[in-house]
Image (cartoon, rainbow over all chains, first blue to last red):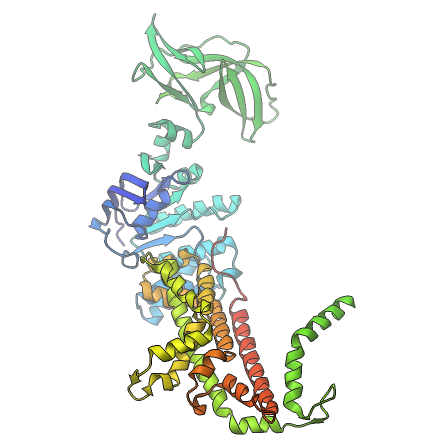
Amino acid sequence: MTPVSVEIRNVALSFGATQVLRDITLSVKPGEFFALLGPSGSGKSTLLRLIAGFNRNQSGQVLIAGRDVSAIPPWQRDVGMVFQSYALWPHMTVAQNVAFGLEERKLPRDVIRRKVAAALEMVELTGLEARRPGQLSGGQQQRVAIARTLAIEPQVLLLDEPLSNLDAKLRVQTRAELKKLQKRLNITTIFVTHDQEEAMTTCDRIAVMDQGVIQQVGTPMELFDHPVNRFVAQFVGSVNLFGGTFTRGAGALHFSSPALGEVTLPASLDPPGAKGEIAFRPHAIRMSAGSPAAIEGEMRMTGTIEGEEFLGEFLRYEVQVAGARVVVDHAHARGESTLATGTRVTLSVPADEIRFI
Amino acid sequence: MLAYGWIGAVLLLVLSPHLGLLLLSLSKVWSFTVLPEQFTLAHFGTVFEDSTRMIYNTFLYCGLAALLDVVLGTAIAYIVLRTQLPGRQLLDHMVTVALAMPGLVLGIGYLRTFRGVELPFIGPLTASWLIFVLAYSVRRLPFALRSCMAALSQVHVSLEEAAENLGAGRWHTVWRIVVPLMMGGILAGFVISFVTAAGEISETILLTSRESLAPMSYGIYLYMQSIAGRGPGAALGVIAVVLIGLGTWYSHHIVASRSVHDVPGEKS
C-alpha cells in the first residue's frame, strides 16, 4: 500500500473554557515515523485522538492523504490506533480480537482466517489464538493490540504511549521492534510519548508540544543540538540555562548574569540581542581540578563541587559557580576516581556547544 | 467451634421463616406442638392442581417485566454515562422516583390513568395481564438501572473506542462490545427485578381483576385468608422460594463463569 501523508492545518480545540490545542499546524510525510512529544497536559494525546476521530476540532482541518476527514466518524477513517491500555476485549480470544476489524469490513471467512494468522505471525504470537487477553503477559497483550490494528491495514498507524505499561527492559526491546516493523510496512505512523528517549530512538521526526502549542518540529538531532526555546532545550535532554545581558568590548564578549556573575564568552559567538539566555549541555562541559591554562574560544568558569551522582556511564556533578548550580556530566572510565565534594574546579565549554535562546 | 455455633445461630434466625413455611406446607395437623403431628404432601398436590396458572403467570409477568427493565436499564445507563444528551441526568432521577411511591399508590395511579384504555386483541388494559408487566417493570426499573449503570461504568471507554477505531459503528460497538461486557450486571439486574417483582403484593392485589390473571403472590395471599388454605398457601410459598432460589443460583452461575478470566478495563 502506498503510504499517505497526514496534515493538520490551524487546528484549535477546547474542552469548555480550557483551550487544549491552539493553532496547530503540522505535516507528517508519507511513511514517516513521527513522534508527538510533551509532558502530560501538553495536548499530544488530544491531537492523536483528533486524528483518530475521537475529538472534534472547533477550527482548522485534519487531512489524511490530502482529504479533509474532520467530519468523518472514527469508524470510517481507516486509521488504526493502539491504545495506551491496549483496550483488548476480555470476552474475546486473541483471534477474535484480531478478527474484529476484518469482520466489520465484511470480508469472507477464509480471508479473515488468513489475515488473522498473518497478523499474529507478524507479532510472533502464533499459537496463542485461543487465549484470552487476561491470560497473556503485558508484552503479549501489547503485541495483540498491534496485530489487531495492523490486520485492517490502516492508512495511518497511531500509537498512544504504547510502551508505558511495559517494564524498562522490555520497553527498550519493543521500541526497536516497533521501529523495524514500521520501516518494513512503510506505514505513516504517529507516536505519542512523554519520554524523550523513546521518541529520539524510534522516530524520524519529533514535534515537541507544550500547553497545546507545537514548540518545535525536527529530527531528534536537530531538537537536541538546536532547540529553539527554553522549553525544548529543557525537555529534550538536560541543559544548563542562564539568562543575562551581553556586552561587547575590547575584543571580547561579556555575559553578565545574576546567577553566573561575570563570564567571558568566546568572541566568535554572536548573540541575537543585548539580552538573552545561554544554554549548554552538561556533557559538553570539560571539568578539571585547579586552574589549567585557558584555551582560546572557550567559555571558562570556576566553581566548587557540591555533590555528585554515579549513573554508570557517567558521573553527574553539581558545581556551584557564583550564585548558580551548573550540572556537569563526566564520562566514566573504569577505575577512575571521583572528584571530592568541595574541590575547586575549572569548567570550560567550547564555543560551538553554546546556544543562545 | 464457636464460629460454627455463631454461624448456625445466624442461619437459624435467618432461615426460621423458611423452615416454618416448609413445615407448614408439609403438615396435616399442627396446632399446639413444637413440630407438626402429622405430615402430608397433599398441599403440594392441591397447589399443582389449582395454581399452576398462577405459577405460570408469575413467570410470565416477572420475566417480561425484568426483561423490559434490563433493556431499558441498559439503554438509560448508556445515555446517562456515554452521551452528552441534555437532560440525561433527569432521566436517571425520574426512574428513581418510582422507588419513592408505595406500590398501593402506584397501583391506584395505574388504574386511574389507564381506565378506559382499550388495546386491540387484548381489551381493556387495566383488566389485562399487560398491566402487571407494566406496573412491575416501572417499580423495579430503579434496581435494574443501578445494576446496569454499575456494570457500564466498569467498562472502560477505550474498549468502545477501539471497536469504533477498527470500523464498528455505534450500534455494532454496543452490541458486540458493551452489552457482552455488561452481561454480569445485566443478569444481576434481571434477577433482582424478577425476584422482587415475584414477591410483590400491594400492587398485585389492586391490579388483579380476576383470578385467572393472578400471580403466585396473590395466590398465597388468597390461600392464607382461610384456615384450610394455610397448607396450600405455604406449599405455594415453598414453590416460590425454590423457583426464585434456582433462578438466582443459575444467574450467579452464569455471571461467575463469564467473569472467571478477567476484568475489562485499564492495566494501570
